[in-house]
Length: 213
Image (cartoon, rainbow, N blue to C red; front, side):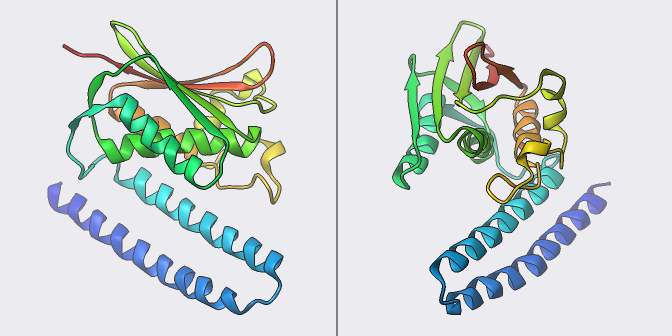
């Protein structure tokens, strides 16, 4: 079984390399496009394809994560992710109730938080992130001001490649992998993700991680 899993990892690596090479070539070629708007649109399409490839490979490898568990300051982790968005001018804010350390896989957990923020910004234009700590758990809440999700679709959007009809346009497209990957990462860490529409409008996406020991 171990040999089969190692072979699968090698195949995934080869597939990823084979797909990234033409994408990199396309990225170079579009630099010759004179129209700034067309060039920017093409660049974003290529970036979206790269993100989709990353998500597919990450989902496939989650059963055998190579990153070790580490004791992580969760407020610092979330703050660093938010800073990445703020640095490029994306309207994302963060507030926390204090510092708490959990044992997680740092880069994977950052990916989960990043995916929720990207989702909030994509559909709501901005994201307000907060950290809430209780004796039993740590909650990372990502709130947006978007249209929300129909109640009967709140669980379905976590399925890989599932997208709501309203997202199927050039501005809010995507393969529908971000939430699926985020949930897989959080569940692997022993936690859970939930979505809830707020009464006044907007959506709360919440990562809940148990405090052990």
